[in-house]
Length: 56
Image 1 (cartoon, helix red, strand yellow):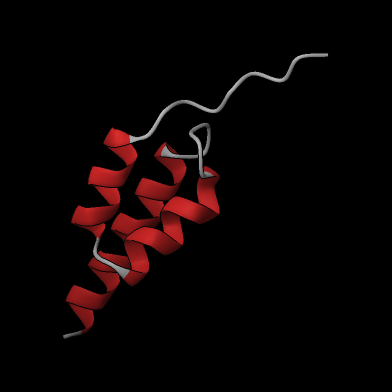
Image 2: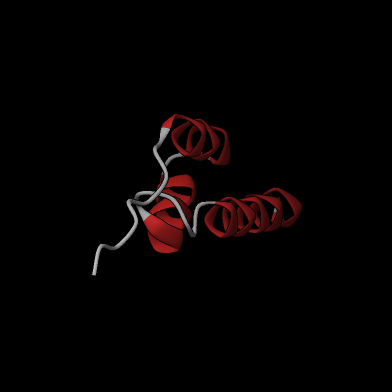
Protein backbone atom coordinates (compact mmCIF):
# COMPACT_ATOMS: atom_id res chain seq x y z
CA UNK A 1 0.00 0.00 0.00
CA UNK A 2 2.71 2.46 0.97
CA UNK A 3 4.77 1.54 -2.09
CA UNK A 4 1.94 2.54 -4.41
CA UNK A 5 1.42 5.84 -2.59
CA UNK A 6 5.14 6.59 -2.60
CA UNK A 7 5.46 5.70 -6.28
CA UNK A 8 2.51 7.95 -7.12
CA UNK A 9 4.03 10.91 -5.26
CA UNK A 10 7.45 10.38 -6.85
CA UNK A 11 5.94 10.13 -10.33
CA UNK A 12 3.90 13.27 -9.67
CA UNK A 13 7.06 15.11 -8.62
CA UNK A 14 8.81 13.95 -11.79
CA UNK A 15 5.90 15.11 -13.95
CA UNK A 16 5.93 18.43 -12.11
CA UNK A 17 9.63 18.85 -12.81
CA UNK A 18 9.14 18.03 -16.48
CA UNK A 19 6.31 20.55 -16.65
CA UNK A 20 8.17 23.39 -14.93
CA UNK A 21 8.67 25.24 -18.22
CA UNK A 22 5.27 24.36 -19.64
CA UNK A 23 1.97 26.22 -19.57
CA UNK A 24 0.79 25.30 -16.04
CA UNK A 25 4.21 25.19 -14.39
CA UNK A 26 5.51 22.82 -11.75
CA UNK A 27 2.65 23.15 -9.27
CA UNK A 28 -0.08 22.79 -11.87
CA UNK A 29 1.26 19.54 -13.24
CA UNK A 30 2.26 18.23 -9.82
CA UNK A 31 -1.20 18.71 -8.30
CA UNK A 32 -2.91 17.64 -11.52
CA UNK A 33 -1.06 14.35 -11.57
CA UNK A 34 -1.38 13.91 -7.81
CA UNK A 35 -5.15 14.46 -7.68
CA UNK A 36 -5.99 12.64 -10.91
CA UNK A 37 -3.29 10.03 -11.58
CA UNK A 38 0.30 10.27 -12.78
CA UNK A 39 -0.79 8.77 -16.11
CA UNK A 40 -3.38 11.52 -16.65
CA UNK A 41 -0.79 14.09 -15.52
CA UNK A 42 1.64 12.76 -18.10
CA UNK A 43 -1.02 13.02 -20.82
CA UNK A 44 -1.72 16.61 -19.75
CA UNK A 45 1.99 17.35 -19.92
CA UNK A 46 2.35 15.89 -23.39
CA UNK A 47 -0.71 17.73 -24.70
CA UNK A 48 0.25 21.13 -23.31
CA UNK A 49 2.08 23.96 -25.00
CA UNK A 50 5.38 25.43 -23.85
CA UNK A 51 5.17 28.51 -21.67
CA UNK A 52 5.04 31.65 -23.83
CA UNK A 53 8.23 33.66 -23.73
CA UNK A 54 8.12 36.95 -21.88
CA UNK A 55 8.33 39.96 -24.13
CA UNK A 56 10.09 42.92 -22.60
